[in-house]
Amino acid sequence: MSNLQHGDDAGAADADADESDDEFTFDDLSVVMGTYNEEEAIEKVISDVEEVTDGKAEVVCVDGSSDRTPEIARENGARVIEQEPQGYGVAVREAILAPDRPIVVTTDCDDTYPMEQLPEFLELINEGYDVVSGDRLYHGAEAMPDFNRFGNAAFAAIASVLMGERVHDTTTGMRAYRRDVVESIEWTENTGLSAELLIRPLMRGYDVREHPIAYRERAGETKLDPIEGGAAIAKSIVKVCLEERFD
Ligand SMILES: Nc1nc2c(ncn2[C@@H]2O[C@H](COP(=O)(O)OP(=O)(O)O)[C@@H](O)[C@H]2O)c(=O)[nH]1
Ligand SMILES: [Mg+2]
Image (tube, rainbow, N blue to C red; front, side, top):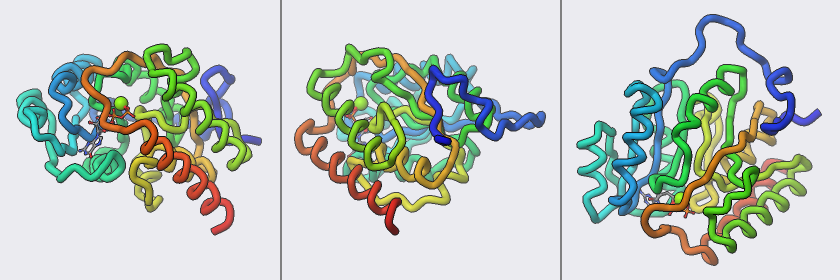
């Protein structure tokens, strides 16, 4: 039986639901992101997190900007770690490993991801899932450029075949992880980090759940070249799936 659950399945019954009183709250959660010249979005993203979590979640930005993004982030209460820009995965890996809170949620700093769904992610972690992955394609992702939508559907199809397990959105930026899962896995990919962060836990038998999310139009310019980035992601998916299967 598959260890992947999707949002429209009955779901939680198969996860090792933790019935104890020590449920995680927003005090146990860090929202982390790479930020690279995201002046247009940073304030909104941080204030959404603050509003939704009542100021309880910690926000961590690993920043490589040459604009005012890091100052705005600090002014809005985020912890900022400075890093030379070296790509998405290098930033996000550092961001994920920075906090010591038990639950880490990744997002992009571009206002595309619905921070208002953070309570749902926390609830699913409390139901026993190790990884909760936002599925943008479930609702159609109309705000996504056509080329990216097609590419993301193709990546999910390739990963599903190679894993022998249906996944729907491998490159989403919004996920919640239990800290022990991220600490037990050595990540290798950069542009393909998001796919790697889904594939390795899934193929190692962790309880992974895809959860439908809304997806908004991006504020500011994308930092990822669709052709070059897309090729890197496809390569990462094949490499990581084969490594998990045969190593
Ligand atoms: N620190 C840092 N952040 C980056 C880098 N590349 C991308 N990011 C951030 O990673 C997130 C994802 O990039 P984005 O442009 O939204 O990619 P897209 O969602 O595929 O269009 C955004 O918050 C970017 O600012 C980088 O080299 N360094
Ligand atoms: Mg983005």
